[in-house]
Image (cartoon, rainbow, N blue to C red; front, side, top):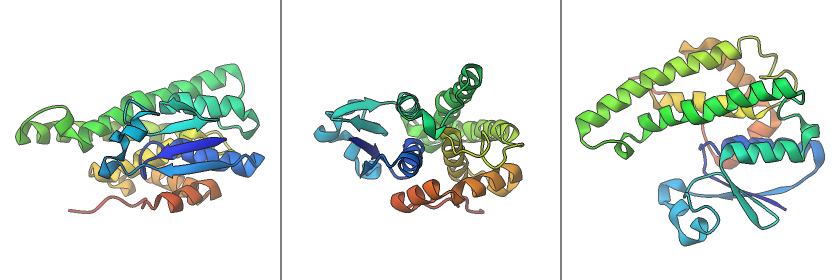
Length: 218
């Protein structure tokens, strides 16, 4: 049995989409359990028992918890290779993992510095400067992703949905919170619109109750 603990709009969106794609392709069912991050449910004793890092996602497999998004996605790809969530050929898979890891260990933390500057420094002025600096950096990272997906047809690796598609959507969505207008990244936005229309993605957007348009003009 597969059980995903997710936070609406968080990076757990990536394995959440993957599990929907797996269900559609194989019939393998899963249970989705919401963790209300804004209410601190990730810090309850019950949740800390399965993920002492107080983070999402957590995938529970036959009662055994697995944390960290890259480990979870690697497990899902290896268990369900027929779904094609990553390229199968060794070099192509390694290159895909390099991109995926960069999104997770570089782009994601940059946004965290924008969204939660109080975690990294004290003082309103210092936090405002940290947020400004990292928002500008985050835009350059989104531009790099836009370059990667310039020839995506229709998805990152072609006809099959991948982890990268779900993560790229998440990162552009977060860009709105960083003050980045998605219309200023037209190739990226058009690609995300295609991704969002995929049935597995649409199902997760509906279940999590999130909106893709997070940017508000000043």
